[in-house]
Length: 131
Image: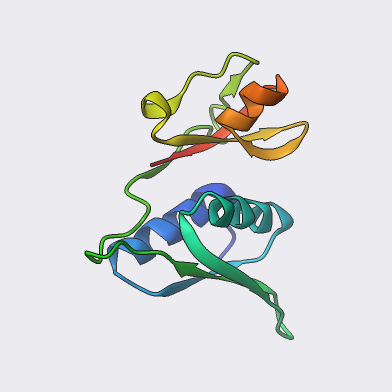
């Protein structure tokens, strides 16, 4: 089934797997999704990911991270910029939840967080927010 918004699909698969308490989830591969997964590993929201290539199509297997109480490490993940309404922000990107959460931004420097964007003095499209 074709997906019109691949980032929303990525977010939804992670959110649903966390709510179902699954250890892993599989997501169709794209370079952007691989970069997003790498960023989420670096920031501690997911445990790890691996790119698996098969004869038909490659996919990304994400190992979800949980707290000691069994709650998902990702409490909230929400799409901000959508295909029908793109959201861009300049160099003065505000903090999400006073710095407790992150905005994930697609900029000219690649996929980065709001904190990195402020430090580098760049803006871009706000893809989603995570807490």
